[in-house]
Length: 73
Image (tube, rainbow, N blue to C red; front, side, top):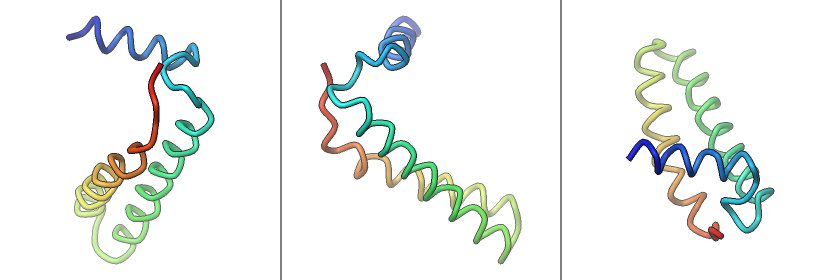
């Protein structure tokens, strides 16, 4: 299992994991942006612990939608 993660990370950083590396990075950035915005809004309205939980859930739920069109090599 560790070897699979290591191999995938190595291919990702070499730019050989996805057919369109720029699309993958853009979608990843969008997901990070969504998570940060949700975290900041909930942290301002409630507290940091709840913000972490909600932002993690929303960011994690957005990833399958964002990555649905990515093609691997």
